[in-house]
Length: 294
Image (cartoon, rainbow, N blue to C red; front, side, top):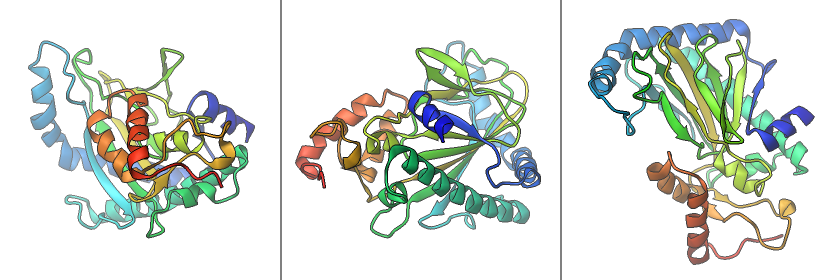
């Protein structure tokens, strides 16, 4: 508990083991994900991304060196609609999502205990009117890049949502977080799940836990796998600092509807988060009124 609290307060990232996913199951997910890329996505990546990047002579700032698709789990699943998923891969990813969802909720309760919030507070805060969070998985591959000085695997950003649970490649590195002005590697640790804090948890904890800028550096060797699951608030969930965590009468962060934040985030993902919070604070006085303190 102390290690997790320290990581959330000072790093915004930590890695967990003994998390409930068996090593055999994780190996199966990895194998099927890499097979899917080779079978269905590798040629498309070369045609749509690699060709565009490699003919440039200066850094490409509006494109990432990644091949990706997105699975939505909650409030409704789209996994049956995604093309080119073999039957076994579709089944395994559905099972993977179920286990990761339970892990996310367990971790949220751990954070509640560390923060002195009642059990279930964060899970409830993420629920919109339909009683569900927004939960989905971004499956990415970062192929070998012969010119890594030209492009980032994924440009620096903070994550917009709540809690991110990442199953990253056990051999090919590339993920980095920003700590005290320096980029620090998040090294591959086989069969671990990397956890990081999103913008919404920073707001709810009134800044005690902060989201952190991170990026993926393109590598010259190896095809890096990344399976990032995002446990986020429901689109109509109202997000605001937990009253018991306020250090003074007024909150340091705004109150807003998550969907409104996401509309802003889409255009500002690769920029600093602070102006986004300021924009939402300006909107707050118009749309939602003062934050309730009881």
